Length: 259
Image 1 (cartoon, helix red, strand yellow):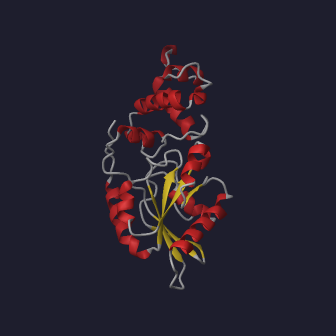
Image 2 (spheres, one colour):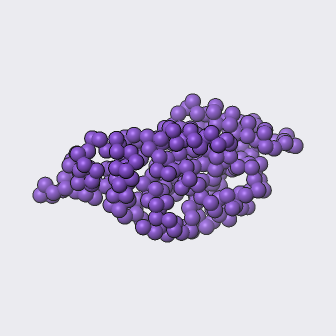
Image 3 (tube, one colour):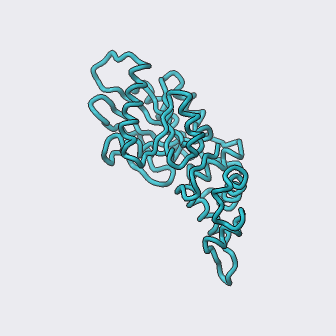
């Protein structure tokens, strides 16, 4: 499955990020802890190359804790759940500590940090958590943020929210499946059945315990257990595929890392 999904607003985002770099002191690259490698857009590192960049792994509560720990141990990386208010102070301390270590402040104004990442990874949610108010638009689907938004976090920190950006072309099939399974690409353009079958094969191989409640690691088994029944009593495999992805994204299959 090769995905070509680079809408016009993503091309504009690329230009926006390049133009905004001169306005900020550092960059937060926000990735998904369930795919800490595949959710890091190499294009963003090309765009922000000379700026101090820290890595934050969101949705850590849904990821395999041992694999997440290995990333955090590399340094300059923080793993958090953006749904947990306790993460706010961890984030603030991490960002402030990184900037203080990396840069010498020669001005009175607050630190300015740009938040970048792929669609639906949680950039606006991170900013709203730190600002303690709904300042940036959020949603459970990619493509919500379309414009640049400055948000005042405190007297010492301001953040720039940017739209999500993917690669112009996703060449590697496994990366496409991973991004699709976690909801970083709109379901409307995806072969849902194909993505779900890939996810099932991965879980059978790497996390068989996640499928313990199903009689077998197939879409038919998922359909039978979850009551996905079509007309005439036949199994509705399309519905089963949707339900499997829904439960995976919500963490109902356990804490799983795809990378």
